[in-house]
Image (cartoon, rainbow, N blue to C red):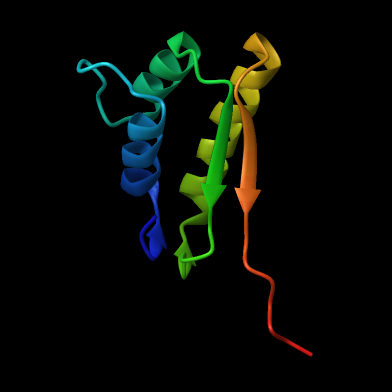
Length: 87
């Protein structure tokens, strides 16, 4: 994952992780269609190298995953974050 988490990065990595078909177009509607047709049941989002998150894009991404899980029972999303070093 790159240092900036935005719509383009999320869609690119989602398409790769779920092996979306060649007709996938990098937009939220196409991501929904391909995700709900996908056989993928679990996704892991590793945020340990992310320095900046576009919260609007990330919230849309989470909504798509949550809606797909609610309607189809898949995929489950696991998010990995780094612990802070604050004492």
